[in-house]
Each structure stands twice: as C-alpha cells, then as structure tokens.
Length: 204
Ligand code: ADP
Ligand code: MG
Ligand code: MG
Image 1 (cartoon, rainbow, N blue to C red):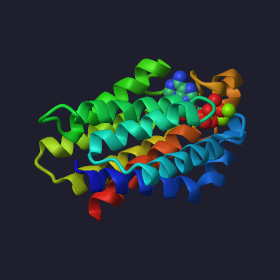
Image 2 (image 1 turned 90 degrees about the vertical axis):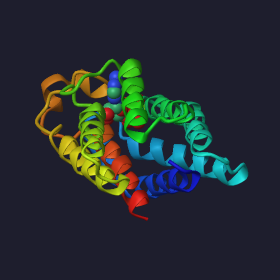
Image 3 (image 1 turned 180 degrees about the vertical axis):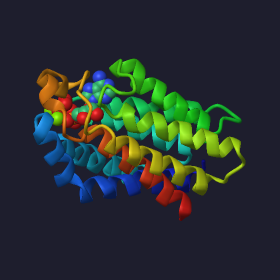
C-alpha cells in the first residue's frame, strides 16, 4: 500500500463517518448510549487535522498516526478498538514484503485481543472477520486490490446486516440481553463503511 492509497482510505472513511454519523448514532441509541456516530466523527476530525498538519511520508506511518490519534481521541469502546486496528495495520505494513491481506488479518487480531469478542457476539468483529477472510480469499486467487477490497466490503456489509437477529455478548449492548435482538450493531455498521472506503480508495 502506498501513501496516497492509505491517505485516500482514511479520508474516504472519515467522509463516510461524517455522512453516516446520524445513522450510526441512531443504531447506538437502540442498543447502546447513542454516541457511536459522534465518537467516530470526532475521532476522524482529529485524524484529518493531524494528517494535514504533519503529512506522513509512508503508508505505515500514516496508519500508525491514525491509530495513535484515535486511541485517546475517541471516547468509549470504538476509539481503542479502531485505534488498535490502525496501529496494527501500520506495524504490519512497516515490515518489508508484508501485503495488505496479512496486515488486515493482524488488525483483526488486534481488535480480537483487545475486545475479546468472537464472530456471533454482535460486535464490529461480525463485519471485520468476514471482510478479512474475503479479502484474503480473493487476493490468494490472484485478484487485484480493487477486486479484493470490493469483495471485502460486500462481506462486511452482509456481516453487519447479519448482526440484527443476534443477541449481544460483548460491549454495552450485552447488558440488554435478549432486548439487543432485532437491532443492527453500530460498530459492525461502521466497519462495513471502513471496508467500503477501502474499496472506493482502491478503485480510485
Ligand atoms: P461505547 O459502547 O463505549 O459507547 P461506541 O458506541 O463508540 O462505544 O462503540 C460501540 C461499538 O463498539 C459496538 O457496536 C461494538 O461493535 C463495538 N464493541 C464494543 N465492545 C466490543 C468488544 N469487546 N469487542 C469488539 N467490539 C466491541
Ligand atoms: Mg456508544
Ligand atoms: Mg459511549
């Protein structure tokens, strides 16, 4: 991944978060505390300001700075979770010969390690895990970045929608028990935007 692609990915996600802020907060008002859209919008405004002020000269640096800004800059669960994902991406891509499929898998591991959630717990993992799997499958099959990212975005969108009938087992929504059933998980919805942003950035 080059610096330009990393920058357009982060910019595109920031724009999507701003565009969908109300929907994300709406989802969080049903099974959380109605701040997911605002948390992410605030975090990514801070990220864009930092990237403008000190433009990073490589993709690993840019992704690491993004993660470092999100961890303290966003209240709640989403800041540390997204922050650790971006830090892991930066760390992975700083190693020579490391492809995006490997970096995405390490980002997923970072979220899993921090949040201790598994697929089916009704969290962002339900969108992240199938996206990473689809990306790897299509990359292994020889597809280019745009095609692999587009398959990942579709998988993330399907995964996010599939959280609706689930009962939450992690995060704030878990306190609702069976009352969390019937609502889409906000973090899974924002993760679908993350992978759609990658597909958009890769398509140019
Ligand atoms: P908070 O719940 O602290 O207000 P947000 O509303 O910003 O934080 O983010 C909520 C989202 O974070 C949830 O919808 C879920 O996808 C994700 N999340 C919460 N806890 C975990 C966890 N332990 N593992 C993975 N994702 C989690
Ligand atoms: Mg919340
Ligand atoms: Mg909160």
